[in-house]
Amino acid sequence: MSGFTFTDACTPAVDDVRSDSTESDWVAFKYASKNQLDVGATGTGGFAEFKASLDENSCTWAFLRMYSGDQESRRAKFVLVQYNGSSLGGIAKSRAGINKPDVEMMVGQHHLFFFADGPSELTEELVMEKITKSAGANYDLGSNAKGYESKAGDIKASAASAYKRTEKLGNAAPVSYCDTALPSMTPCDLSGRPTVAPPTEAKRNTDLTGKLNVSKWEAKGPASPSSKGADGAEETAKKVAEEQAKKKAEEEADAAKKEEEGSKKGADEDAAKKEQEVKVDEEDAAAKASEAEAAKKEEEGKKAEEEEAKAKADDEKKAAEEEAAKKTAEEEEAKAEEQAKKAAAVDEEAKKKAAEEEEAAKKKAAKEEEAKAKAAAEEEAAKKAAVEEEEAKKKVGEEEEAKKKAAEDEEGKKKAEEDEEAKKVAEEAKAQEEEKKEEPAAEKEAKGKPEGKADESAAKLEEAPTKEAAEGKENSVEAALKEGGEAGQKATLDC
Image 1 (spheres, rainbow, N blue to C red):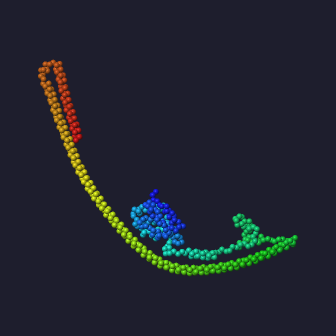
Image 2: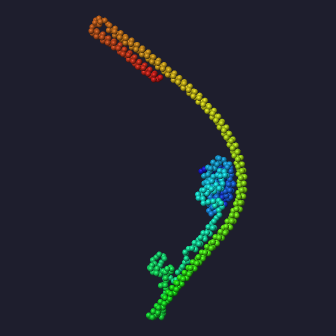
Image 3: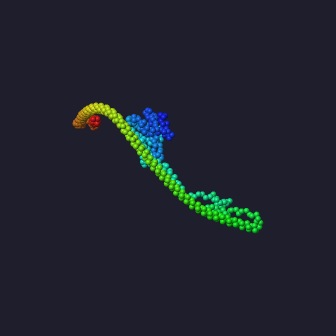
């Protein structure tokens, strides 16, 4: 739901315009509020009356009944109009455009939707042009625009005369009825059942004129009361034969007479027919001449009326043009004044907007300067921090280098001391060994062999600890050197 509504009077007003039994031919709707339409005005004066009721300061919706076609075929056309006044604002125009689906649903079926933005776009000629185009085919070749004259009476009279002449020239003859006595049974059955008599008998009993030959079924007459023997029978037969011959002769004479009468009658009918045709032609010619004379007089009268009407129309048109020119000048003057006011308001608005934009530009420039200063300060601080960080890293590196060098010096000193100690131990061991070797040979000889062996064992025992001690010292020196190398390597890795 869009929320757009209509008052209760809107739908009946539309139905009134749509109805053939009322004279109302337009209804205009005005805005009772932003979301509701109400009936603004109705009328029976056609398009001109509707246009005169429009308000240039608002949007008007209207439903019109107009006619298209010529005087022989007039058709009603229903038109939905949206008219935006020349002084209507842009927001109001946009709002009115949104309401179009709701208005179309309320109005119902219509032949044409017509939109106009100002009085110059809403004229009866423009609306009729769109109606004609929407109808598809246009059979008016200009006669309606110049003034239409119906020829229906002439067409009917000409058609009736043609039918009469054609009927006289036809071959339909009067109906001929059978005027002779009919038999008790008809030899042919027209209902489609099998005939009573065979086809040959039926053909033989029918003459060329279409009448049945019923002579063979005629009554023979009653028998003579005096016929009591052969003489009576012969006399009766002779009498019957004479009567039949006489009757036959009479019939032949009647047939010849009828044939002669028929020929004469046919000739008389043909002559009468020709005479009647001539008479009808003469009557037709007289009627045409009379019609032509009447048409000529009527044409002259119409021409005079047209000239008079044309002169009157020219005067009215001139007066209307002068009035329209005056009204247009007033409208143009009012419009120019209104446009000047609007232009002044637009200039004032533009100046105000320019001042606001200038103030906003200044604030923006100040903010940008402040941001630049802040960015420069942050950049300077970042540079200073980077320098301090670099100096700290350099200092830490120097301290690590000093620690490493001190460790290496300490390790070298320790290693030198251990090497010196090992060297002293080795020299002491060598000196002891030399001393042992330099013992007097006499002292060794004075001792017995057992004693010599014991002394040798003792010397070995003394030498063993000395050797083990030397080896232990060498091992401790190697371990210290190894430990010192790993510590130095670790210190190098930490740096």
